[in-house]
Amino acid sequence: EVQLVESGGGLVKPGGSLRLSCAASGFTFSSYSMNWVRQAPGKGLEWVSSISSSSSYIYYADSVKGRFTISRDNAKNSLYLQMNSLRAEDTAVYYCARDGILTGYPLDYWGQGTLVTVSS
Amino acid sequence: DIQMTQSPSSLSASVGDRVTITCRASQSISSYLNWYQQKPGKAPKLLIYAASSLQSGVPSRFSGSGSGTDFTLTISSLQPEDFATYYCQQSYSTPRITFGPGTKVDIK
Image 1 (cartoon, rainbow over the protein chains, first blue to last red):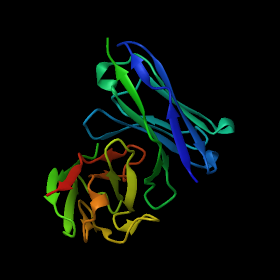
Image 2: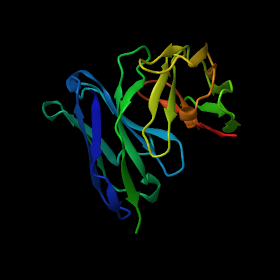
Image 3: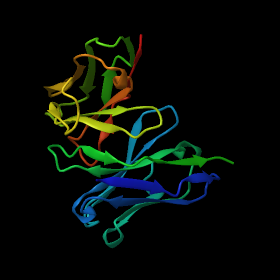
């Protein structure tokens, strides 16, 4: 069974840093591109960042570029998101999600999410 | 960036109703359109990919259609467990994907 479990969320002050983790199991993690998607309270879904299977290709939304860093450790079946210079508008539930190998690469599995709150 | 819109933003329906949600892209995205269902406090769940392909395990009352810029998600006979928010998402510009604003389906 495919499982994605996020951790590392919490309360942080503006300007602070946080590192999110996503532990994957039930599939060959090293074969899949992975994503972070966030959802502000009561709002819609926003793609944040993507990393290819071998970390060769990395992409960021303009809203986080230069502040967030995505990475992965295929030996540990883990995905990470280092978040620096956090702002109030980064407050959201952060989901890790797998790029499916189906036509069009939909996000076929999602974790349960971890809440990041940026507030003084 | 490709912008996605959905209509309506919310709707009220009864069990057994046929429900249709529309999604429109700001440019042609061929059939690179996916639909997700999200219930309160839960992660989104993939329902439909490539505009009309049903994800494994998803009930056949869900169907999708469309290509280019206009797409629809149809629930043929609404069930109690279908009350949720539905999002469309374009993967034409993957990995820079974008989601629609969502359509909340609640009980009439």
